[in-house]
Image (tube, rainbow, N blue to C red):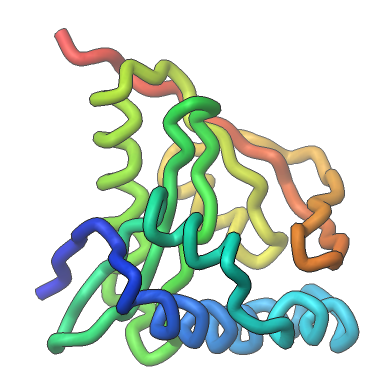
Amino acid sequence: MITIRKAIKSDVQAIFDLRSRAILDQCSAYYSLEQLALWTQSGITDSLIRDIIETFYVSEADDRVIGCGKLTAATGMVDAIFVDPDYFGRGAAKQMLAFLEELGKQHGLSLLKLESTLNAAPFYRSCGFIGEALSTYHSPRGVSLDCIPMEKPLTKYV
């Protein structure tokens, strides 16, 4: 069973590690080795720790963190949905996305936005996100990646 909870400081290393494993496992056919290295090799910064504590949620299964995701309520931006490769295909990403959608609704958002990696775009489309145009994502870590800006209208609570 997968559960979702707010991230805490002790989750930082697990989130950082699973993020790197997920990127290397799922993105290698879409991005260069140089891009993957820039994306995954820098360490944990104070700003990342703050961001995780303030805005991240984690998925847990088998008494361990297996995924993460975040929603910036001020902008409706969904980010950092990563799942440990050992748990791919078990619904963790879909469950996290549904959780973040509900959180968005609770914050009164009418639209969610994200910048999808090329490999993840079919997943997001299957979850109702729309977007086809290619853009460039400029990571705080200094890597530029092709991405697909996507959005999903949220239905309001009645």
